[in-house]
Length: 283
Image (cartoon, rainbow, N blue to C red; front, side, top):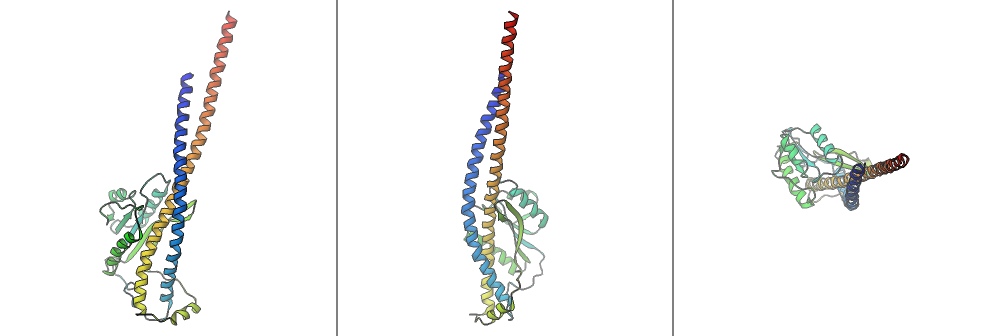
């Protein structure tokens, strides 16, 4: 009986130690989530404005000959795939990996940003364009522009017909959805007639096509970077949620073990009393 009590006490100490670790990781993830969310939201506003400007120009009743609006004969899609560098974030990596495998073709070029999924897709035989893993935590705007420029070169050479991003969309602090965002060819939205008339009154210098080309490139750069920020925000949200769940489970397990320990101790005391009384009666 004493050995059973010692085993339960050892498990209680182990659970308490684990709970301290998960609680600390939860607090760290929550702090990173707050910081990352502010950065994501501030960049999202600029990204949306760029898309609105492109939509405005595309809605204008003028002849447009942008090199980014030409038809492409290739049927290959260039995909930028975002995942995390680390685990311990619930089903975050598993969900986005499953989504990607359902929507991507193995022969299409795939740029993986985030070290966690690199080896998995390499083993599966996907056409990974980066020869070594790329950390998403070290990703900044200038580095992202270099990768996007490489994809744009392939697009202009007609080697691909689509540039898309596979990422995890941050809905709220409890919900994160695997998503696909097509950067090119650009899908314009409908603009009301009143706004279209205002666009027609604008004088473009040097020309509407050159302005449109520059805007599309800037928009693709920024939207891709904005989605990387959204992915990192979703990662921290998922990690915070996973660590919160782990802490709650540890607390629940600790309570059960304490109850088992008290029951074992009570049983041991009862047995000792029974033996003492039995011995006294025998005398």
